[in-house]
Image (spheres, rainbow, N blue to C red):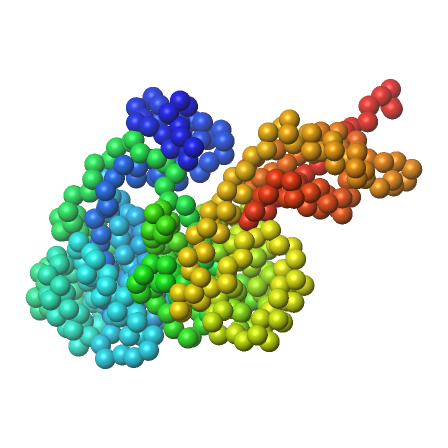
Length: 485
């Protein structure tokens, strides 16, 4: 396409061009729903924001899943599952808006519960309108009354959702919530979908108009960075540090984050999309409830990311769990940066042993950029973006076929494959089949042993760089012909 730039952006698309573009995307194996979403979002200002608030376990996340039409927010039948502000894009009758799921708000709480409540208050301040969810089967509690005072103080438009009204018998319970003084209680069942259409109509009346849907800006969007690692290594602290605010809940209790949290952050004059994920625990199949679904969502967030920043706690020995998480990122084909966090908390002796552990346990990712950081103090945070940019550049590197085959010819001449069974297989020629990550196909006269393939990969890195990216090398052996004729 003539109007395509280096980031994959497209110019203004007419209907025919749009159809042609989607057909091309299908041929190339793209997710058409994601491509259409990227195109739909192109050229817009910010969408109107709707915050969903209420005390714990009233069904906020279930309502969010109902509105966005998929099971995205983590749901479990116990209070306190959602802890951070989590944004999703929603659409109702052609109008798009951002919906923000929040943790349960409680008054006079301490520790992590206070942080969760603060995140809900931040969400109210940043929203254009608020849905206040109340459990109609319980009725208005003292905590609900406190939320009402908070909402009145904010001055934001409020839509009252009387949840868990599963039939006509619950209508009277919902009507009793008129006493909160927030207008009509909209009787809904977020679990079964009852009444959500009328609720969404009321929400649309409270929200400002979204920008018109046009096509014209880039489909690329901000580069997507997933923060991954085992629980309590400091992923949320790192996100807060780069964001310059307390964007997500941080607590010394491991496993604080449950939902992947997306945040647009400007660093070095560039806007990035950082995704804070739940810590990946030792074995997903042994987890229960919210932690199980959180791990699945972390894996899904990794597949949508371009770069995985793997955090390792330097105050503890590198574990099998750390190496498994790195392997997970490599097998997903993501660019990789390794951030050694809590660097300010280790002494010279620990640094010595850490270096030995890295040499022994992380030899398979020597190509990954390394940054020694402290999310708590901000130490060396300025080195994070250059490392990410280097990893992306390596991830997108393409070698011209002529140059690649000249390199392979010199390699085979200088270091031929060992003779096995009286035969010596040779690499005949090769091509780079793709990027993101770089994928090479080598055509050979016989089977190439795994050790020789690793040697080829190592020499490819020495010659062409490929910093911060896994390389996939496959071999196609030339078929023998004429023997059976």
